[in-house]
Image (cartoon, rainbow, N blue to C red; front, side, top):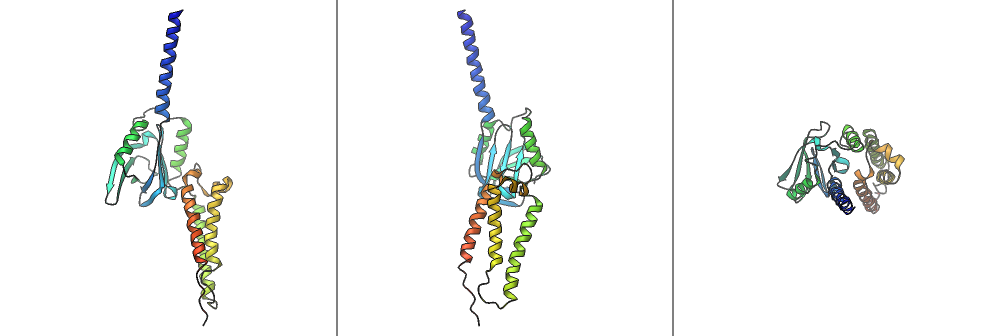
Length: 244
C-alpha cells in the first residue's frame, strides 16, 4: 500500500513537471516593437511588432504589411545590418510575400536567441488546425491589410475634396482663405474612417481584408487621427488672402 502511494506520488510529480515543460515551450512567446522593411516599404518604430511563439511568426507593420509564417515557411532568420540600422532578416518560401523582409531592432543577436527559446525554428510538428487556417488566410490575401477597393475609394475621395477646394477658390473671386471646406472635409473623412474602423466591427469588415484584426492597424489609425487633427487645427489658423 505504501509502495503504491509512493509510485502514485512520483507519477503525479513527473506528470506535473512534463506539463510545466510542455506549457513553457508551447506558450512561451516573444513580442517586440521596432521597425520593418518589407520590400521597398519602410515602417519606423513603433509601427512594427514582431510576435513569435512555437507555431507562428507574425510581423505586423500596419499598412505596409501584415505577414504570418509557419515554422515550415521559414528558411532562415539571420542578423542584418546597414549603415542606418540593424535587425533580423527573415528568409522565407511564401510566394505571396516580398522576398526582402527585415525587422529592425537594436539587438538582433539577442532577439534571435529569444526566438530560439520559443522552439519556432526547430518545430517540425504539425501546428494546430486553427493556427494553420489563420496563417493560410493571411498569406492568401497578401501583405496589405486594407482591401484594394476601399483604398481606391478613400484616395479618390481625398483627391476630389482637395482638388474641388482649390478649383472653387481659384475660379472664384479668390477672397478669404485658400484652405476651405474641401481640405477640412478631406482630413475629416480620414479621421472619421479611422475612428469607425477602431470602434465598428461591421465597418471594419468593409475596409479590412478577411482574417485581419484591429491589432494589425490600430497604431497606424491612432497616428492618422493625431496627424489629421493637428493639421486641421493648424489650417484653421491660415490667414485669409487680402482682397485687392
